[in-house]
Amino acid sequence: MEPSSVLREGSKANLVISELTSLVSTDAEERFMLDVAPGLSVGHVYDRIIQHGRQKYEFDLNGVGCRYWTTEQLNLFSESQILTNESQVVAAKAGILKLWPDQTPLPLDQGAYYN
Image (cartoon, rainbow, N blue to C red; front, top):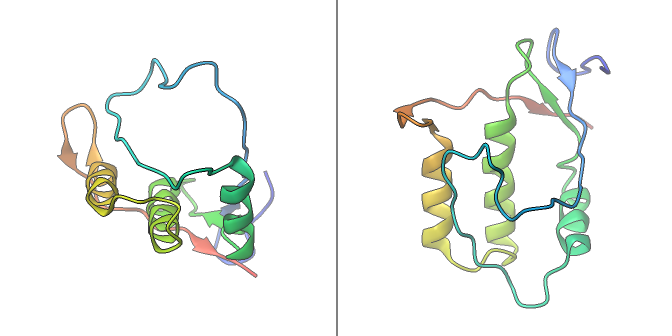
């Protein structure tokens, strides 16, 4: 674990991109469909993340903040027209604000980006 440079007692995130053996994890409580631009590749998504410095993220001292990071990427991909259906993006972001399976409202714990 690499120590934080922005958040007191936080830790730097590690971005891992890997191929999955199934479309949906067996551990998933819910899934949200997201239409993407035709011809999209993993490279396009990776490049957008790097261009906007989104790989430089730190979790707070409790090791949380991934739901905030994910919400930020949904915004970036929507603005970049990687994601093509805004109502699907809105639904996914609403889902991130819930604790599953009970769907209890759960505010985002925010990490921070560093330079």
